Image (cartoon, rainbow, N blue to C red; front, side, top):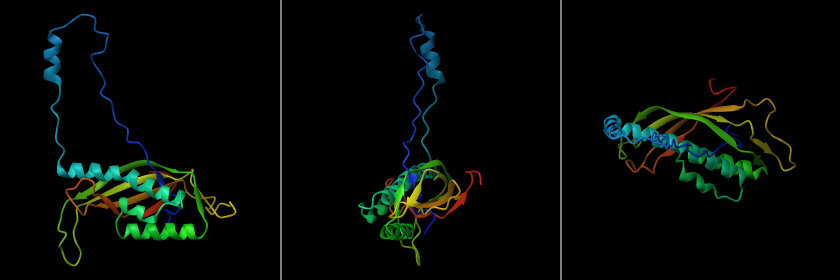
Amino acid sequence: MRTTAGAAAVLLALTTLGCSSSSDAGSSSPSTSGTSSSQTSSPSPTTPSPAEEAETLAVALVPDYLGTIDDLYLDPSLPLDGIHQVAVAPEATAQATAIGKFRSQGYRQTGRSQLVSASAVSVDLSNNPAASPSPVFPTVVVTACVDVGEVDAVDDSGASIVPSGRPRYLVQQLTMVNPDYPDTSSWRVSEAPNRQAESCDG
């Protein structure tokens, strides 16, 4: 069984930083000079480069990918082809096979895991779908750390099948590809090897 079996990550809501209002009701005296000073100090918006945009989109896919796998382990009634919403071969095939085997043995996942961190480590926007022998797609590699401490897997009698000394974390290296680049919704996980770890640092 793959290490990820019964140990997928929960979909976390992306935290958006609200703009802090500097003009609260604490300013009782009107100021005409305040208007011009705020105009000169406001930074102009910057447009991200294609590489920066690719990195952002790839990192944003991580919680979707892990959450989808979690759902498929938790709910055996969900169709396995749901994995194709977030992954392509060979990862989609490997996950569907692992989840199908997990279900056929009567195992059930309990609890959800949590994405601790995810960051892009490399980006390559080379794009040649007609390349031979293998097509070349834009690729972003992302490293993610997942807390699986609350996740268990039980057999049909309710007994845990997870070793008691299992490390709390999984460190994954996810390769994201975009077969339909520059379509921003087409990033998918193609590979996701992982290793168990006692902490996100190692």
